Image (cartoon, rainbow over all chains, first blue to last red; front, side):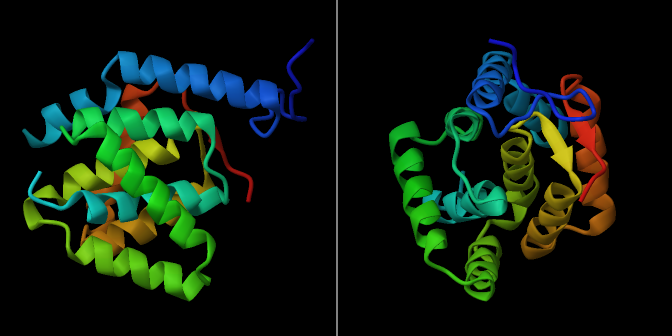
Length: 44
Length: 138
């Protein structure tokens, strides 16, 4: 099933598929230590 | 962290509650924040859950007062770190909207971060998150 997109072509994050995409991206950020690296660079 | 888990959780809950839902991406981001801030993950998740549930029952004024109280209790040396964590939460949907920026500035003010510094930290985050989309709509 195609992911529902908004008029501007971006994924509609309110749908189940959109939320799953967001969760996968959040997992990727976590795996890359996105926040930890920013804090380390700026504050520690 | 010198700041208590409860006060960090209250600031993060304010960021979660900005759009009125606590979705799976935000729950993963809570785990990421616990890891980055070296907090006990189980205790932090429980504290965030408790704060989100409390926010559900609050009026906007009560929620703002709760945020202010928690933000004032953040250790002065840790306000930037807690703000970065709140930004990460608003990034959970991989989109940055006007409402989220507005909420971020409210959180920054509550933490005692000057607007210029908050914007620079936001710019730094945007620079390092290529997947982030910007939504200029209201």
